[in-house]
Length: 264
Image (cartoon, rainbow, N blue to C red; front, side, top):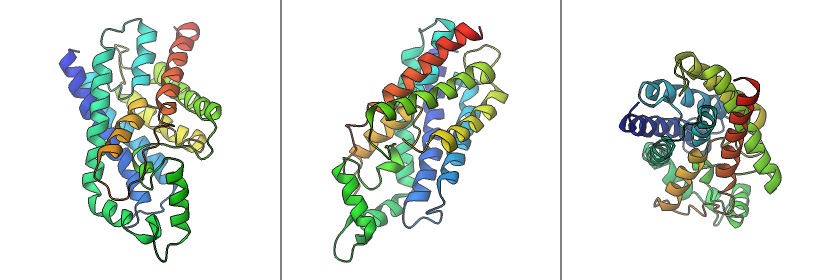
């Protein structure tokens, strides 16, 4: 794979990943969406299918890492870090593009949600407004969850551990079951397996933090949230933002090391 193939493949694939994954979060969250309140099951399966779709499309170009933690895990397995910056650059750019596309696709719903008195407060506001104000005081605006993750209970050690554990499971599954014949990305069957592993992680380990398990999945859309002209959008919760970046990288690195010791 050439550097240009890797960059293009990761940009396209990660953009699709965030478009479909962020899209299900928007569908479930935003008040004027037909899928509002569809629940955690919809989100878990939405993200799993997003990973699978993006992997099948980008796999022939880049191997469909779509996640810096995957890139790190494979680099540790192979001992080859030469393409890591190219992967990272494409993944971050793609994540930002995908987040912008979610905003475009749900533009009217974002406007309606963020100007609704029940959501952002004002005369006649309901409990939802109180919850929104409380969230904004903690640094997270009322639609940040469409773009990025956040913990239900703020406990730095637990939140970091949750992201490490979830990403470790993801990477160990990829390294042992999901790689293509060259061992540098997801294979045809591996993309399907990985999609269902993501669903499993979401259902079993996603409750505490929203399971970023991917640094750019969280960071790219969080940057876009900070930049977009959304009314009453509140903060982007930068005090938490390092956890879904550092945790998955640690989890991916540990999985790469465990693979070399136990399976190689």
